[in-house]
Amino acid sequence: YPGFADVIQGPWLMEQMKAQAEHVGAELVADHISKVDLSSRPYSLTGDAGTYTCDNLVICTGAQARWLGLDSEKKYQGFGVSACATCDGFFYRGKKVLVIGGGNTAVEEALFLTNFASEVVLVHRRDELRAEKILQKRLLANEKVTVRWDSVLEEVLGTENPLSVTGARLKNVKTGKTEDVDCHGIFIAIGHKPSTELFEGQLEMKPGGYLVTAPDSTATSLPGVFAAGDVTDDKFRQAVTAAGMGCMAALEVERAIAEEDA
Image (cartoon, rainbow, N blue to C red; front, side, top):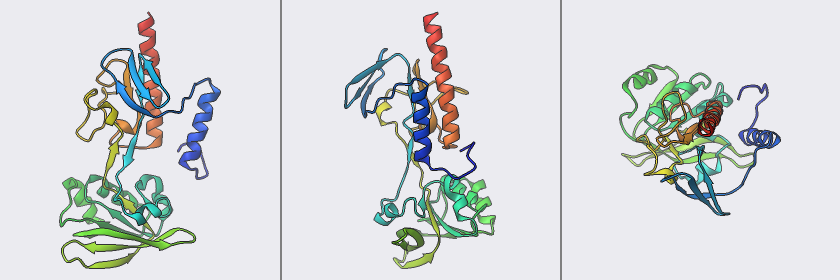
């Protein structure tokens, strides 16, 4: 994130942003919203602690990485297993890493990791990639990349104290044969799922469930409803771009309130 010469952690940055918001007078309410009604203004949001109404709403519910669901995958998350090459790739400079997946996300992550890693192994369960042809061509032409076809990640291997990835157990889906492969990092790249369930049938969405916003704007398909960050961004998914979109949304809300009061 810009402005920090030393490595920082996401949770710490979030706490700093929270403290800054409180310092300038923002009221923060901790609650879990389970229902949203956008049928008419004022919009209504139902949480565990009560009901909230508003004329303008900024949606920043984000997106979650899709995981394989392995116990060993969960165990080593943050200790060699990651879902973000852009975030964690530089930790693996000069090391061997695996990327799990076969779509655009996986190929893009693998190509990015070649900037740091000594070797990148793409593990895909089929015998051909689903990624765009131009991405496939770039991947297969890169000398640092090898592809393990017809294979899946069966288990993440590593040490206990400290927790650290040392390898992966791969299974060939055609033969059933397993093989242990040495590596320092494993990147799960099977896509992301935006947290937009609350808005299904109420706001326009892209095929993947991301909220649609107007060009050069955070405005959604309903007046007074804005979306910022990974809930609408299916391309960059970075903290700095999400923060910029949050700023855009705040300015657009301020402008909307001023126009309503005029």
